[in-house]
Image 1 (cartoon, rainbow, N blue to C red):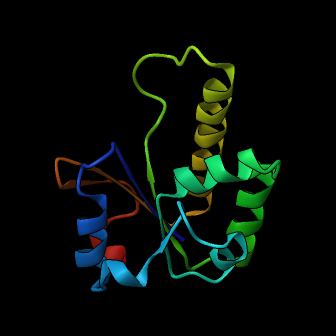
Image 2: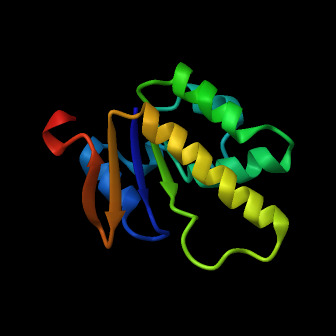
Amino acid sequence: MKMIIGGAYQGKIRFACNWLDMDRADMINGSTCDFEEAFSAEVIKSYHRLIARLLAVGVDPVEFTKKLCEQNKNAVIIMDETGCGIVPIEKSDRIRREVTGRCGCIIAGASDTVVRVICGIPTYLKGAPNED
């Protein structure tokens, strides 16, 4: 498993396309995909939005993420960092933010490589470029 994280609009998708030599059209989108698709997808972009959708329908994102890590060990997960900045006023937004962080920790733990992309520049937090 591989994980790409970073702030919104920081070049995560562009980096992934270059790194994996693929087109963004080949990635499933966490904003719109069928939940079951995640268990066989090569790349899932916007995983943080998939987490929000799971919460909205009453599915436990932490358990879903654990299952994903067990069943799709070769997946590449791309997600925004959501834990920085002002703490949301709405309780539901705070819960979503916390759960997203927990899921990110699960994915990072299951990943061989974790890359943080800021301003289009990758920093390898776990693994190294030549280990891919």
